[in-house]
View 1 (cartoon, rainbow, N blue to C red):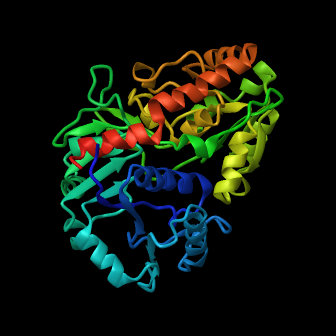
View 2: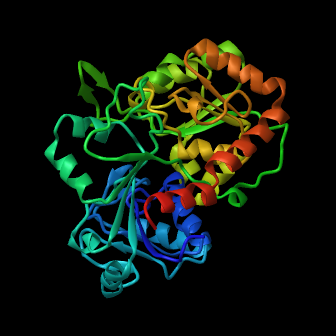
View 3: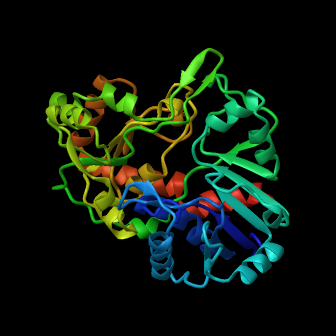
Length: 387
């Protein structure tokens, strides 16, 4: 039995006030709370927030503060969060004095997504967990001797990654200098309870079409921090299968939108889907399942990465057809969760789900419960972080 600890979760749900990011934060904060810990959510990274209404980084944090306040209030966490405005220095939620006291008294900070560069205040905490949700990039920086990456990681006492296959013989990415431990995205199952609906039609996903600025080269290979290359390899999948496939994404490029539409993709507004936790969850619960790809970076390296969004689909009893990153070595596949490498394999996986839809729905929920349930994932995380 774990002893009760005072924990701080550092994250970026205010910096990126969107439903999926909010759920990621909540699964950690509420999941750790349900284990019996005294948990607080904090953002004080100094970064300006993104406003999805204008699709731009802005100086005014009002939208972000309102988003966080709503998320926390809905789960009885109104007295357990702080957001420090990068422009004014004002702390919303609870005060700067209370925040300073929290850092002095906390047993650990969990730097989820590595979203915060630790300060002297953070360094007062005896346990400082770097929790990487997007693997490979930092491991390459370390292997290449990037001083800033190494210094930032050295500020942490423990290092965890969603890249469950990093360092294995079939993964070309070495683990140097730091003892990376595998972890998985947690999900609180009862928050995703969804009645079985055989009439659900569309396989959906929520995605960023193209990311720029974080491609990285290593040992003669360039790895791309973006999904668009892999989506393009699947571009004719709706026409091949006749299965309705929907993407909620923000893409302004007319040529890309036309290409997707010509091939039968249904495009919806990512902001409307992700506006709140409720809209995001509702979108998943109304889906037949998820069809998606992964970033080139995690696919070609066989990192073993698995998506926190896909875990939400599984918890809702929605089968997931997703690009293979090597996760099948650690999580069962074939029923409820079907990996693919080629467009032909993707088409076959969709057909397989549709042949026995109810069985695949049951299997999806079972996988979520056995391999991603927050109590299991976070209890192990705390134990391995010496808490």
